[in-house]
Length: 497
Ligand code: GLN
Image (cartoon, rainbow, N blue to C red; front, side, top):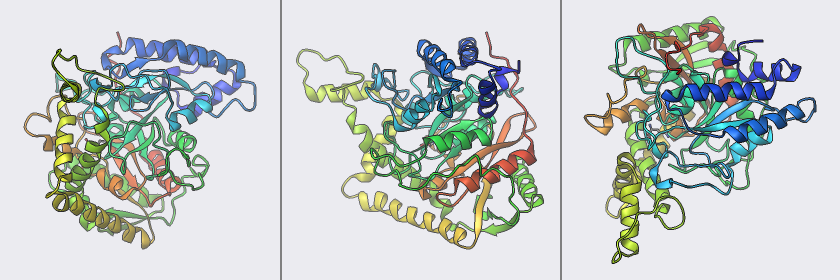
């Protein structure tokens, strides 16, 4: 019997189809691991009974040809995906007790292929954050450790629980969402793969909204192949989301031939920012050389408006969030503050929102309402929209010159200790998103893959950004880099009880 913990989706698929392992064995194995790994705080809800039942039904289906592409594969999803009849809180107190009567489209697509849901994963509240520390459940913990640090490391955010659970082998793969980097940054911090697809590739229906013009769901997996498998399943038009695009979904897995000969890979000079640690610059250089050795043509490119990405994002995302979060008022669902006899509806709104939202969420609502208010709308919101167009245009120009993809670091640092970045100012945390937000603002697909480790033994990721709808190409370049960099290190297992 092969080592169940180190399986990937593609290996598990083979073992399940030959009967070497049963869906029930696999599911029981992961449920046990989740139980003995509670101190990583990655799962906020475990669907034990449901998972066991589903696994048994998968085993009965296993010999059928229409058993589904993920039959018996145990997965977990970020707590931002509405799961029918199962708690969904987006790690916020304000959604306490919320049990959706419907299923998000992307998760529904997984269950239709007979994947097994293990549970819901920890995240930053409403996906706002880069460290998982804004969660009502407390932060998930990165399974990687810094030998010189007593404090555990952040798994990144906002899909920190998803990336940490995959890295710690608590599920075969997970889904996250990415508004400004929340799939790619945690993937990089935990030594796993994460892809944010083109805006409109996947339906956002049933995903708790943060910033609707930026949010996209995507897989977090152990390999590029697994990301390709999951992405194909969750992609495609959905009539319930008018921003999901009617465009053909390629067979992403079949595109992984590793042949990148003759492809032009752009290296943007604006990503060479001061203060980037030498280790990250070195990793980038190694990646560039590996792609070149594999036959790609490396070209220097310029994305001149990149430097405005962070301020643009931190105007637009809060503006959209302030509107999206106006629905949480304590009336129909979720948390409701207890009122005194003489208090009315206004007190109900005020107290529910004051008690139900955490500090970071409140900050975003305040910033968002400010930049949308009369007198400031033109100066901030409208200006940011204009700059967003310029950022998009930069990418379009680069890709129109035959550049297939852009290679950059994913993050400006490896995982940092919990509590180390939110002391002075929130901006310190926001700076983490410097390399990831441009792809969101431009709506482009971008993948992070682990390619090396720091001197202290922490994983680092490289990011590949491609033209819209070119996930197949982006994944194939990532697959090449995955092979060439041969990143195989796993975190030492210190956390099991
Ligand atoms: N860290 C970014 C933020 O706090 C991105 C979050 C995300 O992608 N959901 O907004």
